[in-house]
Each structure stands twice: as C-alpha cells, then as structure tokens.
Amino acid sequence: MKMGREDIAASVLRRWQHASTNRGNWESHWEEIAKRILPSYAGSFQTDLSLRSQGEKRTDEMIDATGAAALPRFAAVMESMLTPRNSLWHKLVAGDKVLKKNKQVRVFLEDVRDILFKERYSARANYASQQFETYMSLGAFGTGDLFIDGNARDGGLRYRALHLSEIYFAENFQGQIDTALRRFPLTARQALQMFTKDDDTLPEQILDASADDKQSEKMFYFVHCVKPREDQEGYDAERKDVKGMRFASYYVAEAGKMLVRDGGYRTFPHAISRYVTAPRETYGRSPAMQVLPSLKLLNEQKRTILKQGHRIVDPVLLAHDDGVLDTFSLKNGAVNFGGVSADGRALVQVLPTGNLAEVKDLIKDERSVVNDAFLITLFQILVDTPQMTATEVLERTREKGMLLGPTMGRQQSEALGPQIEREIDILSEQGRLPPMPDMLAQASAEYEVEYDSPMSRAMRAEEGAGLFRTVDWVREYVNITQDRAPLDWIDWDTAMPEILDIQAVPSRWIRDVEAVVALRGERAQQAQIQQMTDAAPAIAGAMKSAQGLKGMQPE
Image (cartoon, rainbow, N blue to C red; front, side, top):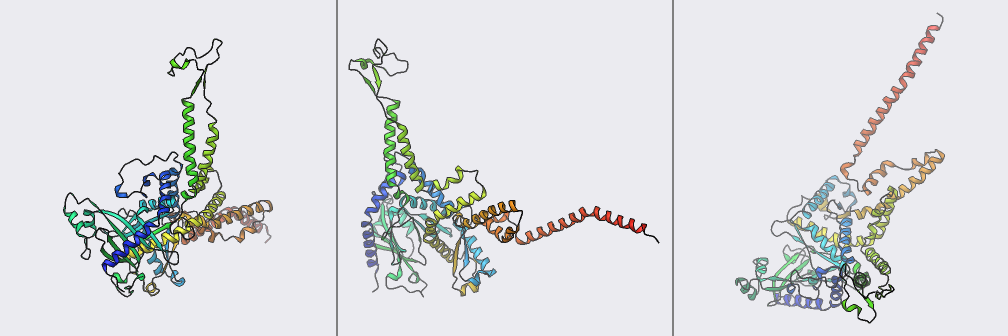
C-alpha cells in the first residue's frame, strides 16, 4: 500500500516520539556525565537547545577537572591513531586478487584516494574539527554521529558532528544502525533558505512568519528521518529517481505535521561510532561511564581537600572562655594581649585539621583510574622513559596495538568504512572522480579499504619486534662464537621495506629498488677498485721480483 505525504509525516513524527520517549535513562546518564567532564553540554539533554541561554556558566557541579582534561586528550589519541590529518591513513585496493596486481586499476584507486583526502581536508569541508567533536562525544557519551553530505554551495564534501541530544537511532536485524531521526530547530528565515526547491512545501505559519520582520527569527521544529526504503512499498532499484535510492529521506515540519521534502540517499549519510555496546542496547557506552564513580569521588575528595586547605590557611582558633578573643586581631603585626599566660603558655590554640597527604594519595589513585580509562596512561609510557632502545620502543608499540586493537578496530569497521563509502558516492555523483577502468567496472567496482594509520602500524609492530628480538639474541651468539651463519636466515632485502613502513618512515626518504641496486653496484665497483689499488704494490713487487729472477737465469 502506497503511503501519501500526510501518512509519511504522521509516521515519522510517531516514530520520533517513540524513540525520544524510550531514551530517558540514556539522557539522564549523559546529563550526569556532561556536568562533570563536558560542562558545555550540561543541560542540553534535559532542556531544549533553542531555550538555553548562550554563554551561561555550566561548571557549577565540576569541582575536579581531571575528567574534563582527559577527554580532549582521549579525542586527540583517537584522531592521531585513526585519522591523523597529516598523513594518508587509508588506501583503496581492488577486491579482486587479479585486479590488485593490475597497474591501471592500482593507479586509478590511488588517484581516487588522493582526491578523497584533498576534498576531505579542504577548508570548506570542515572534516578535522567535526571529527574531533565526534571523538569527544564518543569518549564522554559512548556514541558519536558525523553527518556527511555534499557541499550545497561549492560542491565537494561537508561534515557536521550532530549533537547527541537531537539524534536518535535504530538498528536492523543484524545490529547495524540503518535508521536515524534528527529533531532540530530552524528559524522561519532559515527554513525558507533550506527548503527552496520546487518540490518543497512549507506550512503556512512558517511562510507567514518568514515574511514578517518581527517573526522571521521565530523557531520552528523539523524532524529528518533517514531509513531504508525497503521498509515500505515503492522501492525500485532500477529507477534513477529517489525511488531508486536505498535510503529514504523525509523532512517533516512539526508545525502543521507536514512533509516538506521527500528525498533519498544511495548510501547512509550518518557515520555513527560507538565505543562499546551492552547486550540489546542501541547506544554505546563510554570510558566516562566506566569511571563515573571515580569522577564523582574525585569531586567529593576535591571538595574535602579544599575545605581542609581553607582551615589550614585560615585556621579555627580554640580559646578558654575568658573573653580573650573579644579583642583578638589576625592582622599582620598585631599584638594580642591575654593570648598567653604569665608563664608563657598559649591560651589560644589552632583546631587540628587532619592529614592532607592521605587525601592527596587517594586523589592520585582515582586520577590514575580515570586516565587509564581515557587511554592517557597508555601513551605516557614513551614520554616517561625516553631512554628506551629501538627494540623496547617497538615492544611498547606492540603492547599498545594489542590493547587498542578492539577499540580502534570497531571504529574502522563501524564508522570509518561507511564514511569512506559515503564520500566516494558523493564525489562520484558530482563527477569529481576520474573515469573508472573497464575491467574494474566489469567487476562491479568492488574495492577494499586498507587502513594505514598509526593504529594499523602499531598492530603490525609484533613483526618488527619479533625480528629485533631475534637479532639481539643472534648478536650475542655471534659475539661468543664468531659464527655469522645464523644471520644468513634473515632476508634483509625483504624485511627492511616492511620495517620502514611499520616505523612510519616517509616514502620520500626511502630509495626505490632501482636506486638501491645502483648504489650497491657502485659500492661493489669502488670496492673492486680499492682492492686493486691496495693490491697494486704487491703485484708490482712480484713482477719486479719475477723480472729479477729472469735476469739471473743463465743464457
């Protein structure tokens, strides 16, 4: 049964109402975290964003700043390990093993990758800042959403980190998020700017408000629903219009309950990352949730130590009830008569305040727990022990790769993979990609993403660490026995390029195979010449001796 525009609008609003009603526990949890480590978000899960006063103070419940300081460091760790802005952190390769070796296909996919990075990190795309915001949301609340669309003005890509208070998700039967509902406000003027296509329809009250200077900044709410089009009748993969797109896109105005835009996407526009999920839960759980008791305790401990510190600096005085404090002065240089007895015994004493060192130790323990959860301690190792050998550095890197693998791997599969797919789809639609080779098109244009980020190299550090451990052992054997035979088992020409890659040595610093062969040829030639030069005196002496012996022979 085909749904009309009114039916679609009513269905979207019912679905959003159901999603928002069932998320009360999450929003209460997120609000509690925001007040302690991300005060700029405080109040946003319990109060409408449009009703909040801009610039108001929101740090009233944050006594200790350990979590607030650790969160941006966590986001920096995630960015540096997964999406470092100063390097090409992924490659594109053909899905077919034969096509992987084809130079034309490899060159095409390298060109596509270069265009991706150029468009992704262009100033108009705003990727780096928005991805960082997504990592911040991931560390604080366990879920982040990066919306990816084409740049409406100049073409290319455009990114936006969506605030978790206005976005709602639903999973399919396989546990993949395939539906997103976003409720957001627009002024009447903004709504008129956004919905200006021929097929867009705005309610009369919004149109009237936009025409009135006094009402043009009045807020109106919209719900944007993105869902698989297969969920309803009318999807046809052979069609070229919106009915042939995998995902339906509906913009509904709450005013008048009207469908204002009916569109679609070929790929899901939301790159949603979740830190870790509990059974039968759609939203992720964060490092902050894991250490929320420690964050609360740090606040209480900091409050206690501040009270005790005040008592130490401005102590409570104890005196006998004889009126001596009536004229007692705490000013510098003051003289207080009656504060001591005739024999010099103090009549006024300070109230004992306890041992602050013990409280500081407790605070240190809790801060260590928080920093561990936000991965800060893990990356402090190399800073604290800069005198480590290359082998020790590789060992530490390998350990980090093992510890970070599950967390980072989820981000690659759940967020970065769909993000890259979406980016390629947009740029292809805009005609910004080079022509595809016929052989790749015949293979359904299937490609794979190979990640080349510091995280990927850290996970490969086991190979380099194993080789270095072996070399250290063999070196001791050679030093003792003077037998170099065990080194013959190592193929250094194969190992060196991979070690250089694991150690993130820039490609421009590495010689290619032809240059290495030529350099070895020159070195061998120079060694041969040097050998001949060194041997020349001996040869000349031998020739001279031979001539002398010949002259001594009888005729």
